[in-house]
Length: 489
Image (cartoon, rainbow, N blue to C red; front, top):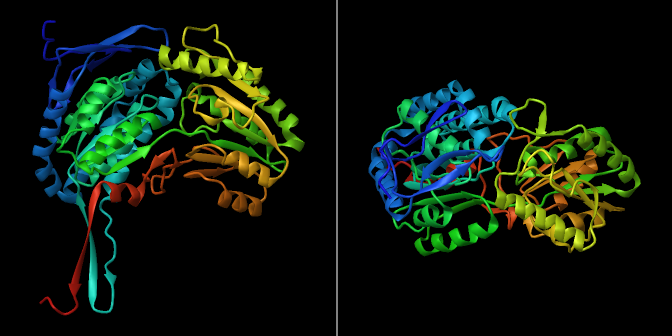
């Protein structure tokens, strides 16, 4: 195959986007490419450079070369550059929103009204957070000064269900802490991360501080996590992929941060605001159910289950399935034919095991990758659809009679990412929160995030926490300097 031109570009939703890698402050094409299609209508978007060992090595070397100068700037020196980066993300909100919607099928309204703003906030927040200094720790004979030294080169592997927002969630603290980074964007939706690299360059981020290597996970991703000269790996994605990354990280004793899958319980007690609970349950179909945090297992107290179900049905009936660029659409497509096939087979196996559809359970007529919002009842705790992450618009419906039964059901999977509890009782809210295994637990709300708070999962849902000091701890080598009192003049 002839070598691609140095400046491979495509036009998506009227926005010009490079399809080459971003390494050492310049665009670098590969001889090989992979195809990128829009899940909205199957339209071909681009042939994207497919990286491997060569590109991974070049990116890590560029990051390593840029690290000393970037680290030496300190939080004060990095602050204005990162704030310009955040400002320019906001300035190009419409472009970023349009590109990501075309690339991964998420709602354009959601991109415009929340996700792009959150991406900018991720950068600006951690740039400011890095300016904080902890007070010295004084003991009888010494004064302890805690230092947060940047760790070096961080490899960041991000998912397709929110590429820009979730990439900046990692880039923000990594860069603010003084590290340089190599991003491996998702092969099913790589284009917003490529556009982000151009924006970072325009904001004045020095060459090599941020690098983007595109490609298939088994090639580009594997080459990056196995590289001998990296210092951190942060990954958001499936538990199975995390196991492979963990094996590579163990060989180099490289610290990892994993945000993985979920099978979160959504608990509704008899005393809950049932309308609020029903509206929030219907919201679990957002992004076609492709949300790791989604409360996919509905657990309703028996005495109000029928009432609640009717209210949920009204909400779901009103949720339009269709083109995510249409402002009236609430549920768009699944990301890829592979994902559509996975969801379809999950539902087929569940029905074969005895599950009954209350609604949905089939392809939606709007298009090839559109699946009807689905609710399955008559499910048992040991069924695959209850135990494993579907990552599509598929919820299960179970009931409980008392708190002990509820807790056993809610905790009865290998996951522990999140949980939602709807109740008016403060005593019960705290009691149940203490008993549920989850990294994030929302009471009478969902998906409310404060970047100062920890985020992550238990069990097979992850390793470590992100947010505030938890992020800075991961991306830094934390050093304690103990000085004997009175020994320095």
